[in-house]
Length: 218
Image (tube, rainbow, N blue to C red; front, side, top):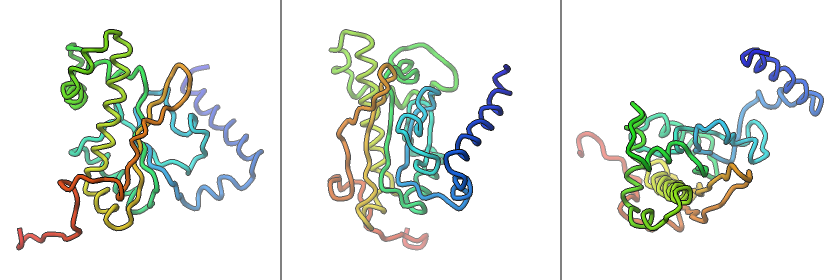
């Protein structure tokens, strides 16, 4: 069957399976969402947030891009972060990378890929910061995997530095921000143990005092 038609057929089968399990499933889902988690992940088709965490529609608010980046000029990402934190009031923000990430692999080399090179430059910045550690890793796959981890750690820091998170932490110390890496070969998630919240974040440079400066004051 053509893949396009199979998607529609798969949807019909999924709907029927859900209704067989719970006849009110879609009725409740249509009433609104209250996810507790924002997932910032990679666009890779092999890393579906709901499936690998065994969660249901409505449980996770998802933003995905190449190599799970948090770029401070990316209005798409910032809009998702703002909505999830200030409207949905999520309790957790998870940056989840994955081993074998194509974007990270590309950032480890010097080849050109086109427009995406401008996006990969942010990963190259992480590579440059940790150049000596990465050079000391002789196995190419292990080196890429370590950059995957370092990139997730860097993106967690970027989340924490946003005015959105800093203001939320000033008000309520939440959400927690975490860094994970998914292993394609095993299906398991590795917690990088870099969780932070408003009580554990100690960089005064990015803290907000809550006062909004008007045009006249500026």
